[in-house]
Length: 192
Image (tube, rainbow, N blue to C red; front, side, top):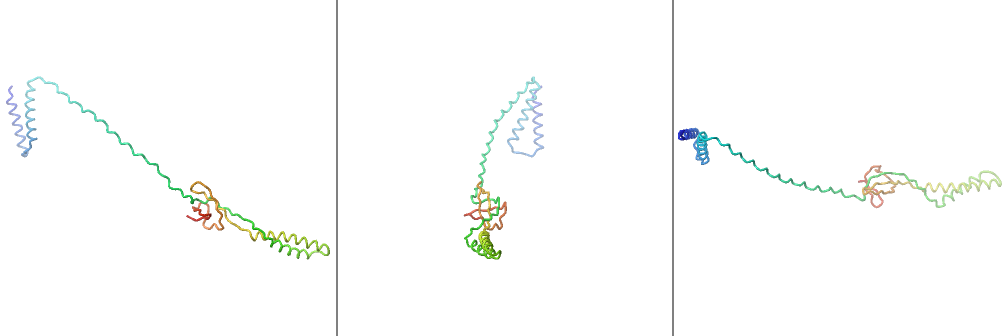
């Protein structure tokens, strides 16, 4: 067989396709048309020659994996600064402190006890009752004076934020209860 009828048919086929398509001034389209024509010519030649096995395409080499970025080191969170004067009330205890006697209570009590003791008995019994009344009155007067001069205060225990424990004495714990957040400054407690 001759090649010319196949070439002519391929050429006619290309012309027919180009007539259906809008005109293009594309050099790529012309190159494609020439490739088709050559492919048809090659297939016609292949029909005459024994078929050769197509060459296998080489497989693309695998790309090396991109190194993964290392995670940014996480900075340890800094603890908030510790307030050395701040804490929480842990306990409140009422303390009753006895007052000191000045002696005036004992003297007044002895006089009153002597007068009362003199009212009992007659003769030497009267003297004995007066002495006993004076002694008892002196002792009672001294104790009464200490109670009058006694003071009450509150001992407040505070767990400080820095881990220590402080005890503060206050006369009035108004507004302070166990669990209250406070600030200890100069021996005084202030609410936070």
